[in-house]
Image 1 (spheres, rainbow, N blue to C red):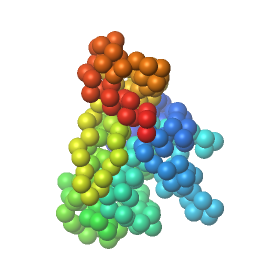
Image 2 (cartoon, rainbow, N blue to C red; image 1 turned 60 degrees about the horizontal axis):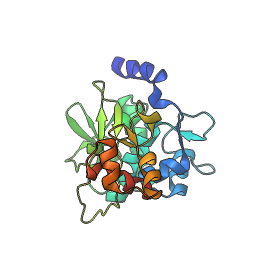
Image 3 (tube, rainbow, N blue to C red; image 1 turned 90 degrees about the vertical axis):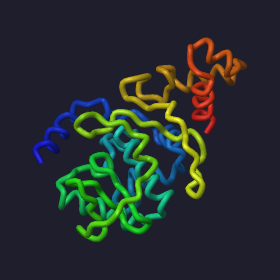
Length: 228
């Protein structure tokens, strides 16, 4: 519990919780329908949000909010877990495990019907209130780099359509790092928006790769990211 309190104190001064992304940009980066992202972040009517926004005004998402939506999208896309079960699992983790923000503090997993969290080297089936079960890892979890405290520091968004039936490994070249390019997607430190603008103006991928000293594949992924 002391570790969780230290993590909360660190985040209070951390650029990872600074409001930085419009809903439109975040939805594009995560390949999510804009109304879906708004519903998860803001709720609807009497329905509460799935995760808390770091922007008190509810206008912009933080990097941590991006990660939360990224993981939630994986749960929904791959396994079709209903939001009722998601909320139930989140409530379980908050109350039983003392975790304020489970989607970033714990690795959620599912067997197609129920959510799981990794805790004390065992997997607790959150929707079954403590029953143990085997995990089914989400590809989204492999696209997050974490610091020694277990908190996200980098997110590698998908740059192509995700086929949940026949998944194709996507390269981890485009990165969202709050400390690089003002948190905008980049490759090799170069914002993908800059590459996209030059590409649309007529520069070829090969020319751009030469200019920035990047692999052609990195340039192509940057273009794919912005063309979504």
